[in-house]
Image 1 (cartoon, rainbow, N blue to C red):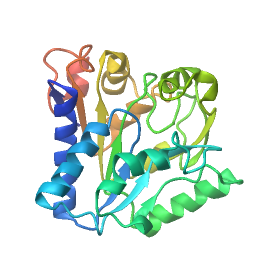
Image 2: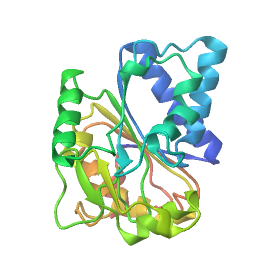
Image 3: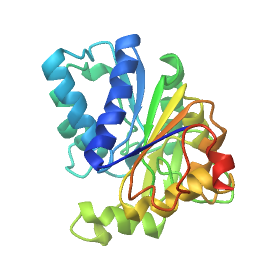
Image 4: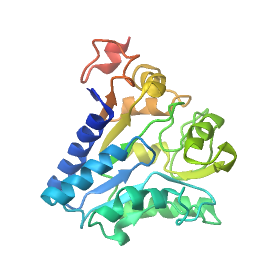
Length: 255
């Protein structure tokens, strides 16, 4: 596990964008796993800039998003379909047929999860997965639980997640209570994972993910077992980590 601590949110996005761009330059037909929310916006802005200024080519790239709210139409301004189009896809030369996001309107969520997994497998798996982290240390919408969820599945959102996401709605009552999310197994199958976090409100979650025990009560802690993870956080999100923490010996330095 590699840790990068940045001075600002914008620098966090720059560091993440550099990794994504490098992945695409090395493998133009890369399969990317993407996240939504406010955390990766600066990364998307930087990637759009690189596309426009130096021609970073997304024409062969395939993307799979982590999740979508259940019952949310793609054209709803709060849907993750809409978020991705507005913040990223419509600004680059990606082919829409190469963009995959779980169908929140699917009547059979079990079948939808199975379909999504089959699509990922058919594309050869995810080369690079981008993650944020929730205040309760969830990744995707894999909430704290007594067990690690396996593959793409229906999830019930925790109240803490609902309250955190209510900033995007008029009030918390409008936030959907369920979502379809990639599971932990799906995320862990990615060749390389980037986890992003910024702000003091994410500091406890980052500490649990990097320094805590590997437990379903802190879903992001499973990343300690992944073979290739880069964690990029700003100083505020890193504020609870040991002062001398660096690079690959994170677990030992946390103890």
